[in-house]
Image (cartoon, rainbow, N blue to C red; front, side, top):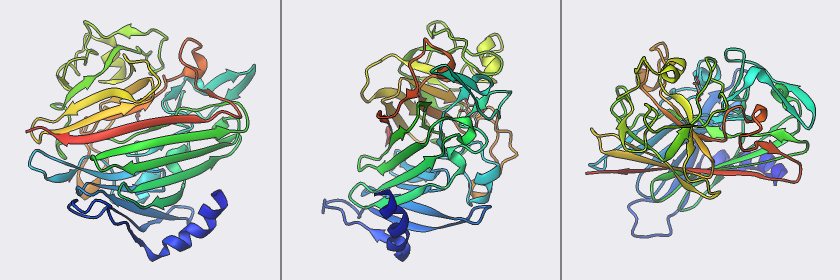
Length: 381
Ligand code: BGC
């Protein structure tokens, strides 16, 4: 399957246009997936951009460079579809400037303290790239590699991305075969299915790092957030969890009822807000069952757009774009100022390889890592 994908697929897709007719004749338009060039990487490899469209007209543009979601449209209360993600118009800035816009994150999403962990009595040292810690897979994480892509036509078009991470890459043990499938569902949801296998014991925590702005402009402070989580993980000054699972009740981390993201974001009396420069923490989902469960709902009052996030993961990182500072010029020439995008990254807990009380992120030969997250869009009148 791998060989077939790598050798034949580029030729098969050479025609650049793949159209899949919808089986449902009542739908407004056909679902489709289309391939175009996204330019060359710094080391001369061709990157592609895939446009997925569903029968309602929702559209996702995804590149096989870093598996980045370059744009994603969603309907407002009048049925107008607009891009609800931050990103760049071209490939070059994704290779050097991007704060992980839209990207697939691996081998380990979020931080591993001091880039060190021990597994089965052996110590491993990873690349450190964030305040002395390892963040989002290191210097060249899964967000900065070229994935092999396979377009899957159908009523719900999908893009299957595969990547083989070598034994020792960024310091991690084991060859990791990763498969991520993006599916644009007919119910206006983008579903992400992750799978991985290894040939040596290793640690895995995959996620997606899309920055959303449901208004398509301005800051995100008026977006109303509900997190179906009654505890969160306090962090130290370098954003490593202290190990405590703290109840959100009575704190500025309580989003169990819809609350504007900006309502308490500058609470200078809260040490955790100070450390994160806003929200940059993992919340533990109240529903600890293994299946797909609701994690978050975001409502944007001016457009009526709603995003519902569900996941099989136990936690979700809510990050409010605190490190955006207006120096990045994004799509359409927009300068991304502080808090103009937010991320809801579904995940296992940060630093789990060093925290035996956290759910395990160890993957062993013979096991399959599997995880699913769904971002579903709708609108309120
Ligand atoms: C992290 C932030 C980090 C950001 C990178 C988030 O997932 O939690 O601390 O700055 O990614 O853009």
